[in-house]
Image 1 (cartoon, rainbow, N blue to C red):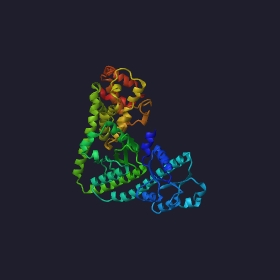
Image 2 (tube, helix red, strand yellow):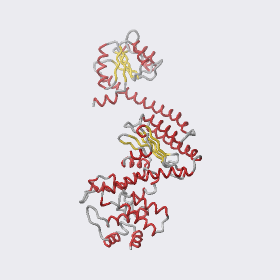
Image 3 (cartoon, rainbow, N blue to C red):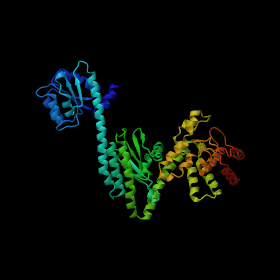
Image 4 (cartoon, one colour):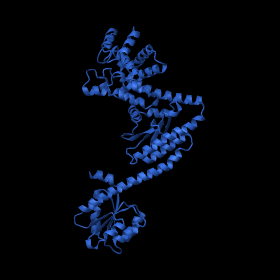
Length: 485
């Protein structure tokens, strides 16, 4: 406990001024045990110069000293230092300065000398709390001044890369970190999902290299940040949503730090201004760019993101020979069902993509649960039931997948409300998700698994029809078996 206290409080610096060596020695032991830095001075004139030359948080000052009294010491110090917290000590109560003098000199505490230092210790701890509160207020004041200075600068017209680097630099100075990145892929005004990336420190790499650095769990947390529009705190970093003045999340900023900045609210304010400035600057810069260059850049970035997610999806397939090809077949069946409903091309594309990625969340499920050959226990089954949310969070990290996130999230919901993860029922479940549900169940039934052999077509059909209207949408079931023949 004492070690922790030392580590926590070692930035508090205390100077003790007393012409009695015994008092200095005693307070040296007490203050160091409390975990604070100690300096002792037995000459009041020397103490004035020490405070002038060095930065101290707290002064413990004897009143009766030679060649000048304690109140004169304070009077001189207050001429150049208004911030240091001062506790006045006296061994002679009748000789102490009057209350009016204590107030006028801004002396924050007064204590009589005694053999028992308990009262002084309480005053020291109270003083330290005040010092920390003043620091917090100062940090907020400095932070607000920094915002007032830097925000106009980020609204000046410049290249988008310069802007992203400038924004990152400002945010990193708030958080006192060396490694960070910013990714923007939802510039709402443009009508397209343009993607922008800038890293500093460890993340000062190409986009290809950056994508290789991303872990599935980190993608999931990025998606959660964007979905909830809230700051997410990780063990070694902070993910900050970039929300424009229209309350839409344009992207995220990641700061690699294990300390939560005191001025977190200021970071949020700055991030909102940064998001708006990005939209504004990009609006200006986009006018001068050729459409074919924009399309080519966007398609390249889109393909890279698709490749990254595809690698994750194939990783799930590679983990288990029994489910290999399952996602492709689900996508195939889902599109066939969609065509039977005469859905438009956009909806069919959503069904195809959702079918391919509907089980992407299983990459976050432990192998010993995923490949278990006997019956799952209650906690294991609860873990399996998290995969729709995990998958939705992973896909939410990239705005181009936002339309298929509900299909992935709700493909295990049931018409009767007994599904998971949210227990939606009937029309609460998106129609396209109800299509994925039937396609997924049919392929699962007609495929070999570790824990059972596949069903023949007739038996699979009977089971799905038996659950029509309870587990499955009856209209989807009817259409599916209409084309299945």
